[in-house]
Image (tube, rainbow over all chains, first blue to last red):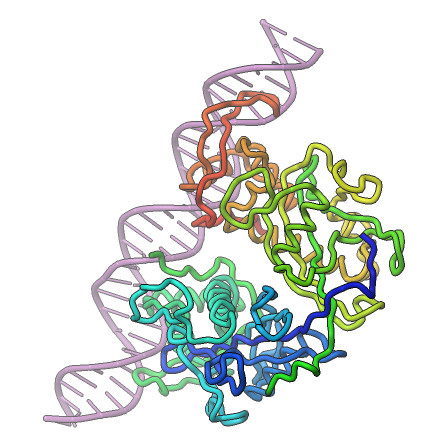
Length: 251
Length: 251
DNA sequence: ATCATAGTCGTCTCCCTGACGATAAACAGA
DNA sequence: TCTGTTTATCGTCAGGGAGACGACTATGAT
């Protein structure tokens, strides 16, 4: 199968971002309003073209910074940035009516930002609960597809990102990416509850996360910002894989 | 960030395949010999350009069929085909010295084929143990990178595919994709042992897989093709997710 | 006949988990 | 100040799954 550099179809390559955060006990995604056709006026995932000399991860980090001001860190550092990883690639012919576009979707997990869309184009970007963006809310499941108000195939991409986040916090410490640098066990539990959409037993959850070596390290302080008895503050520990994993309740 | 259809850098888009199988108790990958520069004469992963009107999954299935004669089935059917799923996308500038190429890597899991490379170009394709292709064998880890004899960044892609397969057989029934339509518990255990590179207790393994609902369904027959006492034959059951998962031994 | 090889069934113990009682330390309001 | 509310944290107990391993079965090979 010899390569023929002059005989391959040209593609446009973009990165699309599924940026998730937890706001007011709900899992939310960043959506931007489209200013042009097609899908003008509809919500879409943030994204853009990959530049000629740019790595895919670099392009995703650049788009993330442009939209949220967050700096990405893929694995290690627990800086103010967000977790960023590649999600999947979408390249159906006709997914963009204008041209052949292959989009490398990325998943970003960010802590709740003080001013959600203040940095970028505030009137055209917002955090929205994922149920609303996916059309999986209380609306009865009458038509099984395209209930999502998102443009292109972004509903499918968002669903994949949400599912990835839901499964990944099971066996990794990634849930801490939704938390500020210092957080309590209860705040971490509310992250799990929001992402999974369940209610967890506070006592078993506390035993589990504090008993998993490397998951949490006490920072020494306490806080009462959630009300009630003062809670110990923790930082994310060095462990990235949880063994044994957190278990998502059945059913 | 308005789209400008006339101002985006053109990319070539390819699919590369990590095709894994278990042969003689070893995890093997399909490699093809390059006939041209760059990397002429080196081994590489099979792959090729995505056509102008072709879906990414379709392109991957086409390449798989061209190289192995296997028909792909992504999730459900347990036909003679192979499991095929998207793995990750690689698009570093300079990963191909000739042009800007974005490669959407796919992972295929196939049963041991009677004639490994008889279908295609037999003298330029072969199954090779993944340790050999990755350079992670008994060779001392003196230089930590580029010990792989594979062209381009295919060593990295193969490593990602192997790691995906290793983790995915933990919580899914995908290990059966390495087996013929009918197989014994012992044969399935040898698949796990080859993929993970461990030795498993036959008694605990038997209890686990036969006790997981939907994983295996008895086909009625028995076989002695492995020697010893006749073993019951099974087919893959309908379950795709194993709950609780198979546990890879520690350390 | 005996041995080697695989397969299959049980048992025992440890540890994790879920269910849930009890206590502790803050704040709000009477 | 006292009481109720909220959240955090510690303990207990029963059930299930997994690792370690003994025992038995049914073939083929020597």
